[in-house]
Length: 77
Image 1: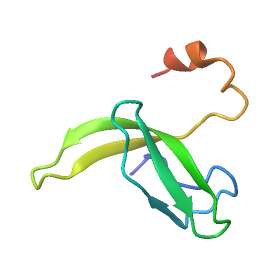
Image 2: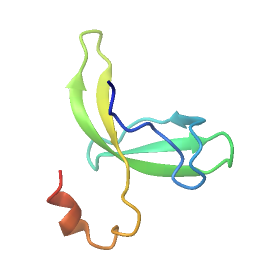
Image 3: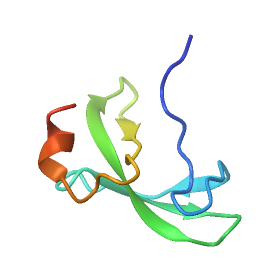
Image 4: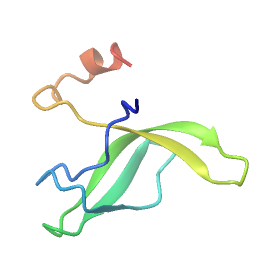
């Protein structure tokens, strides 16, 4: 069973999104939503590089309502 969160638009919740190039310095990745035309950044975790040279990342969904307390969020990861 795959329990990985699915990449979705933070504005409208659509799964019809396209990822951009991840910024490994701040662990964020831009995404573009095809439905609402919103461009936003999502949190990611860099997992390494695959055998064929592709960057492996894990999408970390933002928890609604606790962005104001970043120190609490760090304790959970």
